[in-house]
Structures are given as C-alpha cells and as structure tokens.
Image (cartoon, rainbow, N blue to C red; front, side, top):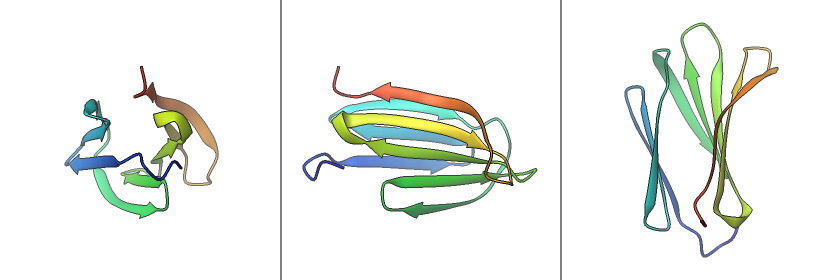
Length: 85
C-alpha cells in the first residue's frame, strides 16, 4: 500500500464507512456483525452464520470488499471503489 495514503474504516453496528483522501463511502452489512479484526491492509468483519466480509485497501486508492463463507470460499464481491477519481 502507498505509504502516503491514509485510510480509515469505521464500523458502527452493521454500518461501515470508509474514508480516504477526503472522500467517503458507506456500506451496510445485511447480517448482524459479531466480530472484526484488522491485519495489515485488510479488515475482516464476521457475521452471524459464519460468513465474513473482507475489505482490502489496495494501491492507487482502490477499495475492494468481498464476502467469504466459513470455509474461506469466495462468495461474491460486495464493494469496489477507487477514491482517486
């Protein structure tokens, strides 16, 4: 990740808000959130039923959010946005 780019992800209940470069995006997780963790450029949001949402902050101010099942199988892309536009 670019060292001069600052990301902020806020989680309030089921509401996710991502801030970067003075811009923001909001996402609502449809299932109840039970836990989360942060590892490097990844944020993992765990929901009831065993699935989890993975938000990744990539180069060029690009955000990707994917949904995985409890077996780490990719189910769908949930979020995809570039903050550099």
